[in-house]
Image 1 (spheres, helix red, strand yellow):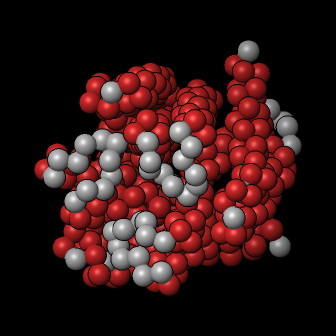
Image 2 (image 1 turned 45 degrees about the vertical axis):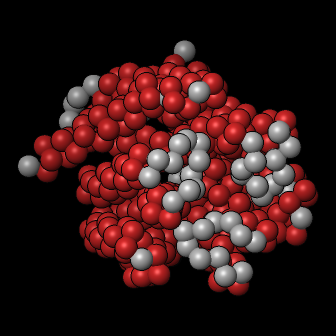
Length: 133
Length: 133
Length: 133
């Protein structure tokens, strides 16, 4: 479980970095709260943060659920979850960098953070079906 | 616990469907990132996704907390949580369908996904007070 | 664990209050869904809710992870987490009140809800490193 919590903590710290970048862009481009539009570069950083929320809301429960269900079945749940988690972390970093440079190039980073969540959810579902049957 | 994790996984998969619908609407109505406005139908799908985040942020910890506290007290926590979870899942689906057709009709689906969370939170609070006293 | 769940439930109930305030402002200033702009006071309440999501997405997993890791190490994890949680709850309330009156004054409340999450994440990281070594 410690391995999975480590990944979750790293994902949250990465998200914190994205949040700081929004704050910096807010100051730099003089976007006064509560506005969240007004300069395209600010909007890119804001969308990176928002999209990371949209991903974390799946990823955090999914990695936790998968490792719980998989370990109960005697699978190497923590290790598999950690590998998928590292792909997620790298994917988010690529996504953020690509979005800031050119939103059109954000696809690879998006998939690298999105697919691990899908695999974790599918693995959890399969694990639950096996436990219940 | 497996039953509760099953509900959480289904809620996350339902949320994934809403996210795909936003992506489809982004392409269909030619809304280029980072914009999140520009066509009323796109904005409806986007608000369904955003509102589902606003709900999941309560629902996931609430169903987990309720089942943990209730089971510790010897209540049928998993079963009650699962029933409330199914209402949540159906409510979200009705909400999304109603919002896409006519935002003014989204009330029933909203309540069906909102009230289960309130009941889970209230049940958790009552359970904690009983455990502590 | 019950103490930590109590804090999480209170944070979610506080968030529910912010959500109701958005709903009220939507009616009062006649902002029709799916619009989320149109009146500065509505936008303030909306940003309070959104910023609370941005905080809860860190705070809930962070307080849970910290108390799990700290208790496993024999530290008073639940009690420390509960104290930090109370600071978070008060900070969010101050943030919401300040934002509604004058967005420029929201700094103190923001820090009071942001720093507890950072301390919880840092504490979890340190705890995991100690467990693994």
